[in-house]
Image (cartoon, rainbow, N blue to C red; front, side):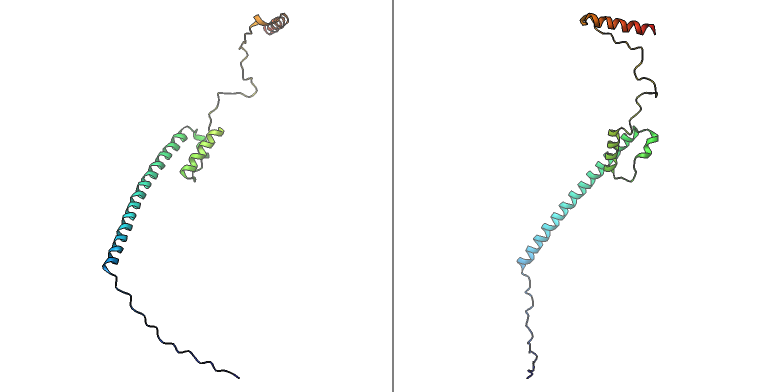
Length: 147
């Protein structure tokens, strides 16, 4: 009992062509287009202003970096990385200055010599000292003068 399946007969669907746009629709489209064009122009001018500001700021940062690098000794300028962006380079230099990498020498310090010179005398106010403290102070000063 096999049933036979017959193909369905389909009729073509009639479609109507799209209606012609009316004058009102055309005016609305033109108004929207004009509005969008005005917004686009406004965004373009704003973008151009921002681009000039960015260029100015980059110039300021570059001159700031150059000023900071002028204080760095020549033998240490090679330590500054060249492959960083302007902002990262400035951050790196500031961090290096804080850690003291580029700090100058603090005088000529010789290893093995005392930092305080021997000839500095500290005068003590002996008017408020007890008798035994005065004796100890006198003994120490006589001991230093014999050397």
